[in-house]
Image (cartoon, rainbow, N blue to C red):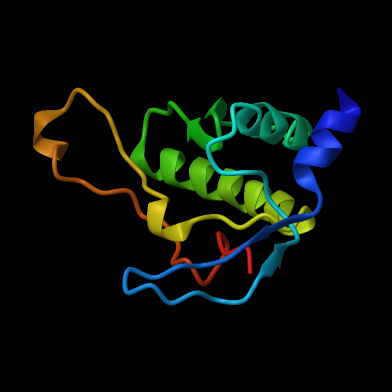
Length: 132
């Protein structure tokens, strides 16, 4: 099994073809797993098995991660989530993983209708959450 996985991850290359028939030169892939492979989610889960503990509950599916936190005040939720995102950003930097800031979202669920349009206060992508 190890040999199979090593073969799957090594000596991979690609050629880019455009719609008008042009082709790039052969390029080698140095990281990542094959897109669409049934083993990719499993390998990702193995890779992040040491994800640090956070105050928030962590949920993962394939290569998507979510953290959820329940508190009684907005400021406590914002403070807790921002602290946990800082922990996760440090982990991502350590292992050279990049957070897709364009796909990173926050959502708040509550029972108070007058707060329905409230948004969580999150740092910009250039501060604590940035993994670059």
